[in-house]
Length: 216
Length: 298
Image (tube, rainbow over all chains, first blue to last red; front, side):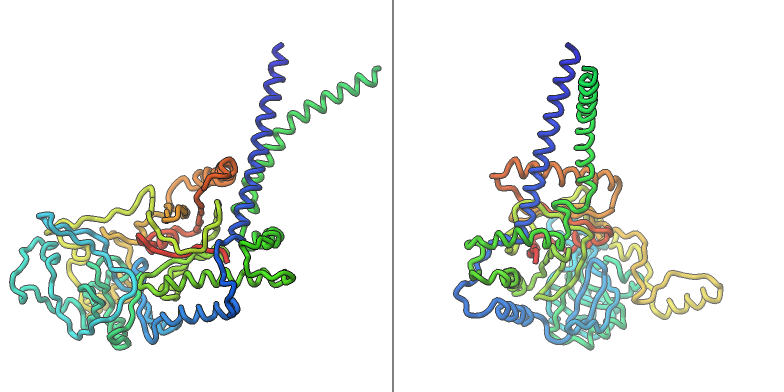
């Protein structure tokens, strides 16, 4: 009797096992079909009446995309690696280390205002070029130091901290020099991009108003 | 009679052996299927291309999906379909290239993840392996709606009055002249000091800033069309166990789930594997909220 029960259990177990294996095998076949569809089934509708061949259309599209690319020199800033590249077309003219935003948060003691010190990402233009720049300290600089915010403009001005050149790219953000050269290659700034003196000079000379900056 | 008895006994032994060997064989096959690299979902793009060429030829008969096919030009069909697919991709990229924002392109064939702006490649990573499952993704622009990680990076709060991290680390800014003088002094004394020259920064002291190394090495990217991309790298502990669990899930549970829920819409899933944690961290850094891009298989 016991032997029979064991036999029955064994048969039932075997059947369940075989069924499971068959289901898995069918599932894998189905999965393969789905993967094959990735290669073949894109739901797009080509222009059936178009007289232009697909290859000609493609080269026209490529040209159109290329037309959006910057002409002349442009600056690329990799905020993850804290590196900059001065480029012209595919050529890298110069590269080096920079410091970008620390990503820290500052909240005003009364909680009314807060700042996130990130370097903005995207495409920007050089909007201003300044030699021997002075830093007009914004409110957060005083809040961060725990100092009262001055009412007079002249109390906000500080010289010699931005290096010899500064290139503004909007919303108070600049590419500028630094005294903290040890921190080049690290994320330490309040959103501006700090350069070493020689790199900054090269960038300042190579760029003009309207030069594109790509930060990523 | 004696002979038949012996034969019966042998047959019984054979049956018993079969009963014992069958599950063992099936189990072995199952384990082998988990270990084998050339299995569905883990195939390289070239393998898929070769394997699917026959299937794709069959599917090209479908007039709805391939309206430009002309009867009698079957030899030229794959080329045309490739061109049309590229055409579709370029049209989508054009919409992205018009914007000032940068975008991503995931090429499943070359296993490349590009960050592009205006059609230019800004940065690129190559995955060691890409897996994908589910219904094919339409060749359309998709947007990142959420990044999910077990240990997401946390921004540090600056306490007013304590100054920023740069000031804390570098309380006394060093001028270039002073730096050179110190270097000469140290050279005379035979001691070394950390370099402070421009271009040799990036030293490894601890900062309270959010840096690439603070980014997670394993996380999920969830897109607005339901696509879920898991990014995996050897960052963190228990990687082997996690990989085993993921393999089981990918090769057994996911296909079975897809098979049993055949009629239901199931979202696409993808896993990108990287050999270096920094690659995965770099993607986490570059894939900002709302970033748009294209995933395609050329």
